[in-house]
Amino acid sequence: MRMSLKEKSVFYVLLIVSAILIIFPIFYTLSISLMSQEEIMSNKIFPSKLNFQNYIDVFSIVPLLTFVKNSLIVSGLITVAKLLTSAMAAYAFSFLKFKGRSIIFMIFISTMLIPGEVLIVPNFLTVQQLDWINDIKGLTIPFFASTFGIFLLRQHFLTVPTDLKDAAQIEGVGHWGFLIKIVVPYCRSGLIALSLFEFISSWNMYLWPLLVTNSDRVRTVQIGIKALQTQEVLNNWGIIMAGVVIIMLPSIIIIIFGQKYFQQGLTQGAVK
Amino acid sequence: MQSFMRRTSDIRMAMVCLLPAIIIFTIFTFYPLFRAIYLSFFLTNLKGQASLFVGWENYSYLFSSPVFWNSMKVTSLFVLYTVPVSMAIGIFLALLANEQLAGRGIFRVLFSTTKVISGGISAIIWLFLFNPSVGFINNIINKLGIENIPWLTSSEWALISVAISTIWMNIGFAFIIYLGGLQGVDTSLYESASIDGCGYLKRLTNITIPLISPTTFFLSTVMLINAFQSFAQVDLMTSGGPNDSTNLLGYEIYREAFVNYQFGSASAMSLVLFVILLLVAFLQFKISESKVHYQ
Image (cartoon, rainbow over all chains, first blue to last red; front, side, top):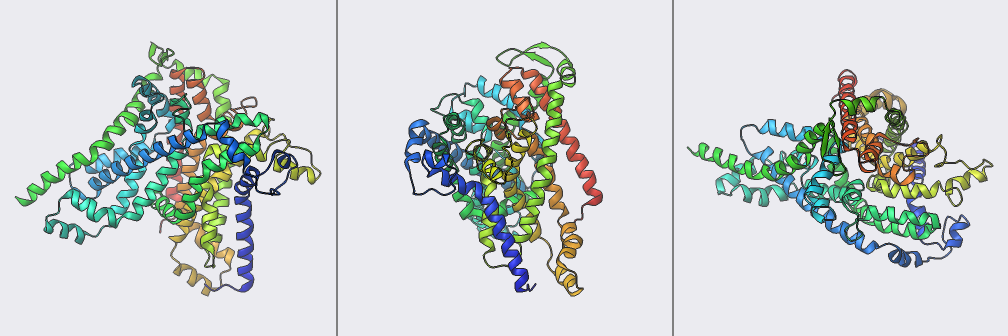
C-alpha cells in the first residue's frame, strides 16, 4: 500500500514518541548510574559528565562479580540441557513412529497448564530432601526439560522435507546422524531462538533462586538486585542503578541482536 | 522385514530420546503436583512433612480467611488493571511497526526490549521513578503544580504503581506476539479493501482486529496466568503492603509457605489458584469458540 507523505509523517511521529516513552525508564536508569549523588538529588535527567565511580563502588558493596559468574553458569547449564532434552524429545515426536506418541505428547503439553505456584512448595521440599540447597544442582536440574522447548522445536522439525529423511535412510545414516547432521543445521533458527529465550528466562529467575539459596556464594544476579535494594535506604541510587545496568546488559544485548529470532521463536511456539 | 526392523529401531530411539525429559517432568512436575494435592489435606511440621491429616480443613480455613479473599480481590483488580492496558498498547505498537516504513526494524527492537527485562529490574527502576524525593514522576507532577502522589505508601495507589511497572514489562511481550499475528494476516485482503475505498480505521476494525482475534485470545490467556503469578515486583516494591493492598495470590502463597511455614494451606491455596486458572482458560476457550475468527 502506498502512503502519502502526510500519513507517513503521522506514523513516524507516533513511532518516535512511543519509542521514547518505552525506552525512557531504561535510558534514565543508565543516566542515573553515571551521576554523582548531588546530581541525582538535584533531579537532573542527563549527567553533566560521565562518572563511572558508581560502577566501581557497586562491586565492593555487593558481591556482584560472584552473582554474575553464578548466573552465567546457571543460565548456561539450563540452556544447554534444555536444548538437548527438547531437541531429543522433539525428534521423537516429529520423526519416529511408536505407540502412544500422541498420548505422551498430550501429557507433555498439558504440563503447561500447571502454574508454578503449585509446584514450588513440593519442589522446594524435594530439593531440601536431596540436600541441594545452596547447590548448583538445586538451581538448575529442575529446569532441565521444557514443554515450550519441545513444542517449539517440534514445530521446526516438522518443516524438514521428507526427501531429506528418505535420502538419509538410503544413505544408511542412523537416527543420531540424521538428527545432528541434517535436522539441527536445517532448524538452526529455531534452536537459536530457543537458546536465547531460555538463557534470558533463566537469567531473570527470581523466586526459585531466592528459595533454594541463602549464601552469597551461590546466589544469582536477580537476588543481587534484592541485595542492592537495601542501598535504597541510604539513597545510593547511582550505585543501585549501576548494578541494574550490569545485570540487564546481557538481556539488552540479546534483544538488540536477536530480536528477529526472539520474535520468530515466541510467535511460532505460541500462536500455532 | 525391513519395516519391522525400522519399527523396532524407532521405538528404541524414541525411548532414548524421551527418557531425559520424562525423568525431569516426573520428578519436578508430575510428582510435585500429586504431592501438593496430598499436602493440602495435612498440617505440616517445619520440615514440610505431613504430620496431621485434616481432610478439607485447609480449604475451609482458606474460604473463611479474610486474607485469602483480600488476595483474590487484589489479584482480580490487578488483572483488570494490567491485562487490557498491556494488550491495547501492544496492538497499537504492533500496528505502527508493521507498516512499510524505512527504519521499522529499529522500532521493532525498541518496542520488544521490555520483554527481556526481569520483574526484579522493572521493580527497581519503577521504585526509583516513584521515589518521593528524587523520583522523576513526582518531580514532573510537582512542576505541573500537583502535590506528591504517595505511589507506594498508600493503599489506594500501591496496586496501581505495581500494575504500572508490570504493564511496562508486559508491553514487549504483547508487542512481539501481536506483530507476529499481524504478519500472518493475508495482505491481499487489505488491497481489495483499499480498492473499495475503506479508510485506515475502517480497515482496522473490520479486517485486522477480527483476523488477529486468535492472537488476542492467546495473549489474554497467557497474560492472565502471568498476572496471577507476579512475584518479583510485589516482593521488591511493596512486600504485599501497605495493608495487604498489593498482596497478590502468588505472593500470599509464598508467604504462607515460606514465611509462615504452613505448607499444607499454601498447597491448598495453590490448588485453588490452579482450578481458577483452569476455569478461566476453559471459559476463554468457550468464548473464543464463538467469537474468534480463524483464517
